[in-house]
Image (cartoon, rainbow, N blue to C red):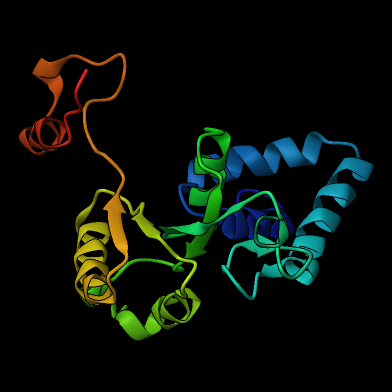
Length: 198
């Protein structure tokens, strides 16, 4: 049953297709957009179209960029001996915000998930292997700590160990500000495994 404008219903339907946006949130967003001045809505629409038209994947690392290669791959200040492998471009942003990593990145474009039909040929694994050269000293696997991330880490470690390059993974453990009693067994196990000398 149509309670409002058909055009507004179409907008709600489109917004609800976004990840993490349910029908109620989409409806709130649509109502908010309706209250905005026309210029702001046009600016938002232009920003969406510009991103689709002008942002592409870097030909080296597969991160999002307007210039190819991206500013990280083309920067002479980056450590070219270390490549941090991540699942998605938003993982690059998260690591860059720490200001603790100065190497290069490689974005796989997802993680192995046989149930979803995502195999090694669907990820940028071949491109990663092609990037490894005599200058590469370390590959850091910074994949999500879930079933798909663990499967991808295992697959890549089996593939990369024979290459003879130092292969590491990011540490996992207890988040700062939390209590041990609320941590699950797997997280506690990883925290004990990844302990450091003080």
